[in-house]
Image (spheres, rainbow, N blue to C red):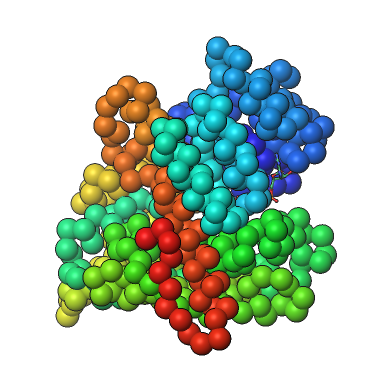
Length: 377
Ligand code: NAI
């Protein structure tokens, strides 16, 4: 692992999720931008001293020469560092698991996706929400035509944690997220809009055609948007509406997806992730519950406990990690991946996310509303 040291947010989630199914073991790391803190943290995690590295270059040098070198490296650092770290790892022959957004700039995303494709290295992107079993259930049912032809997709990701200028009060996570040189050009849209955009496309299979956007910065002095509204036209005629906000008071992690077809609709809310709401046209509301025997194989393979024993965020993240492990094992064995290793988010999905963010910011920066087509679609 690179990044994710003492006090960091997502690194610990990676450590728990990667090991939940026993698919991964954490054996080496350069956990902190401060080499000494990073090494101390590695020792606190039970890593051997010779694999407690001061920075990612030392990690690459150290691991490249070992017979038991790591299989893959997870990048859990701020956005602007993803590209140089991933590039160096791929060039040294390592598979990569990278946090979203894939990179802070579109140029870097294009270059990284090309490098991943041409090198044949595995580059997975941790779009967390696509790991939920009920999201896979919705995906399968939509593909099977259960709600008919999709008309509109409503997806939102509201948070409240940046409703005040916490970046000026020493909050490390908010500080880099509001710095365009570290975060990239899209504030809320880059940080969480990318999750919402990926989730909507993942569940529906719809491909974006063009978009028009309005972004706003409500907290005084903040350099990036903290609220974004995006209207989407999908190929084939469906429409979408995406809202991301870091200042939506009352929302802890309110990612919500609603898909409306000409025969019915599905709704899913990540704070109640075990339930998928199905409404057939003119029929009764149906609650499809995680754990039920009626679920698709794609959902079943991503569940661990029977109904009534809730699964959540950590298990969804674990599904992503175990899926990456299966994809990598399948590649090594020269076979097709099993269900868990299929449809995992890869570098191209990451590139599409960054292209989406850039198009949103470009559209919103225009004098009058303009429909733009991101380069990667
Ligand atoms: P953070 O600020 O809490 O932690 C960043 C960590 O990276 C710190 O330990 C820092 O010392 C370390 N670091 C920075 N530069 C480094 C370098 N060059 N080498 C080694 N370590 C370095 O950040 P947070 O919130 O954990 O976000 C990290 C990444 O994860 C971001 O790209 C963010 O967008 C993504 N993220 C993804 C989430 C998801 O749901 N998939 C949720 C939260 C964050």
